[in-house]
Image (cartoon, rainbow, N blue to C red; front, side, top):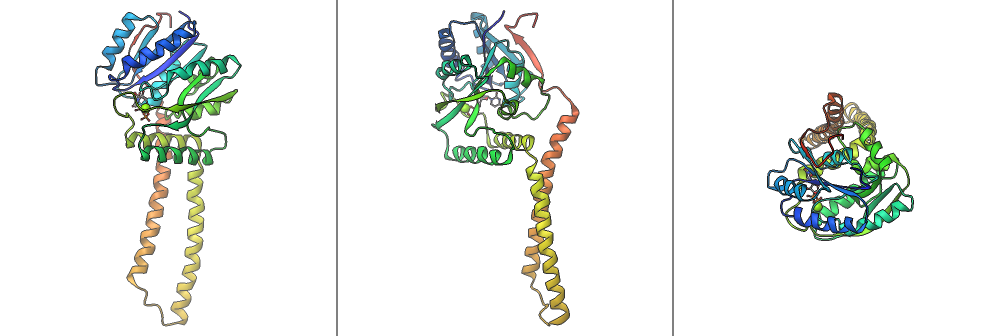
Length: 313
Ligand code: UDP
Ligand code: MG
């Protein structure tokens, strides 16, 4: 079966939102009067998410399921959905309805005008904690200042991409994926549609601090090696200052009586330098760990079951 549009929805423990998500997506996609498929990627949910999608698959041929063998993470789930999609245009959307499906027709409109990537830009974010808003805002700006090409700020994975771009994504083998960065990297004609990010329809965020940190570090380390440069610049600066201070210490020792240096000053220097060294080692570790991940060459994800897909695919 061919489809003009594919909608990819990553889901992880989303039993509270699945039905509503399906209903709203269905209504919007029916309006297009074109063939479409809705691909739910179940990222190792431990609740009844899988069962609910199974039922949807049974009653609606447009619904498809990719069931992961365990939780592989949001970005990987999106990737699996794109890899298995058939549409000439692929829409990526979260299940929690924070990104309103009703924006999709605007994206399709832009795609028909000839754009290859139409990303949703968050003009406003509703119902998210102050901490999340501040950290997200800071993260997008830090990343932008570190990368040499343009990754648009305040933009999530909610977007429409053309088949061409989707194929480029599927040809990339990297393991620590920051999908929105990769889409920007791919180039093509890109444009934005502004929307207001809503509150979660139900349930809680599936992005605890730990996952947020991993996500942010993936974004930074896979698109910039400037943090490594920072290590060498800081190293040079600090050893320069240390050398000057060493000259002062030798001068004081040889030519004055004022060398009874206190414990406090010695301790502060030791603590400061050890702190800096450990931070720099940590930064290097982040890169080395990712190099290690890439070299192992394991598959990006493992699928337990697929439903609704043609045998031929
Ligand atoms: N998600 C996923 N795997 C994960 C975490 C999240 O597939 O390990 C899905 C989740 O079900 C949702 C989307 O990714 O559809 C975005 O997650 P969430 O809404 O919890 O993130 P937030 O909007 O709070 O940043
Ligand atoms: Mg959300």
